[in-house]
Amino acid sequence: MAESKMAFLIDTSRCIGCRSCQVACKQWNKLDADKTVNQGTYENPRDLTSNLYNRIRFIEKADGDSFKWLFMNDRCVHCGDAGCMKVCPSPGALYRTKEGFVAYDKEKCISCKYCVAACPFEVPRYGTDEKVSKCHLCFDRIGAGMFPACAKACPTQTLQYGPRNGLIAKAKAAKKTVYGEAALSGLGVLYLLDDKPEVYGLPADPSIPTAIFLWKDVLKPLGLLGFWGSILGVLTHYVTFGPRKLEEDNSGKGGDAHG
Ligand code: SF4
Ligand code: SF4
Ligand code: SF4
Image (cartoon, rainbow, N blue to C red; front, top):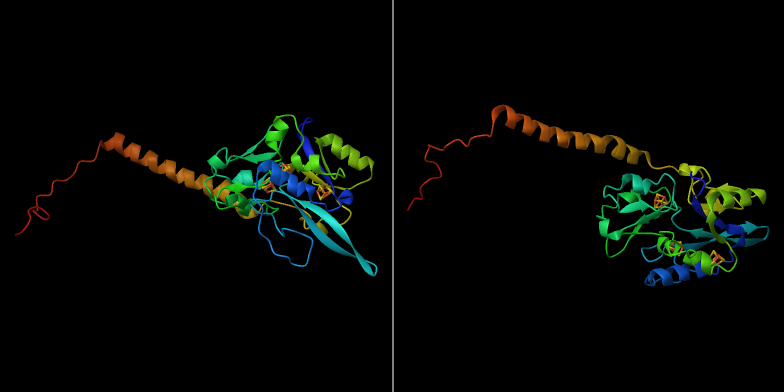
């Protein structure tokens, strides 16, 4: 990773579950509200949607005779080696910003949904427009010299944005374990967790599904080879034998109409 790479660090121990981050993201990105029903939990909505780029998971953890909440900010983690980008067949639909995050251009999305299968964190969503939708790490705000909307709204500094190396060094100095430092060539969104990743719904060892490598690195090149091989075959035939002449139909079949 480049020295100047930026990152987003989420210190879950500081989160109070206020969900200002959810609201700020919706406001900045002009995202409609999702209609939900009460399911007996404060967690709302229960999953990311095409109109919800980050949300707080409310995790109940046993604590003696009682329980305690663990709060977890769920979102795209902007993988260094991003399965979504790797599999996307439409150039520029998913792209990396100069800060190192994974943004997208809906105009270039062809709605194939390959990115859904390729994401180890089950992040990309599709709405009624049938275009990819997820956290883009406020590339527009960052480009204008502002902080990401969710980080700006967070009252407890759970969400921190800054140079990646500096954030990691600070976390390690505080004897915290960093999730995502090396996984998938380094995540752009790092977590500080008080328990195992699985408790927070994060994969312990995230990896891009093997089938994606098969499709991207083997089957797709073979398909292209077959396509260009066919073109080459047609050209070779043309150069060798010249254009194919239409045989005249002297049999009379299909000629005159019968009264
Ligand atoms: S978390 Fe998923 S959508 Fe986000 S960059 Fe990684 S692979 Fe892509
Ligand atoms: S970084 Fe921006 S787009 Fe991503 S969750 Fe925060 S506010 Fe939303
Ligand atoms: S704004 Fe900050 S403290 Fe509030 S829920 Fe989001 S991450 Fe947690």
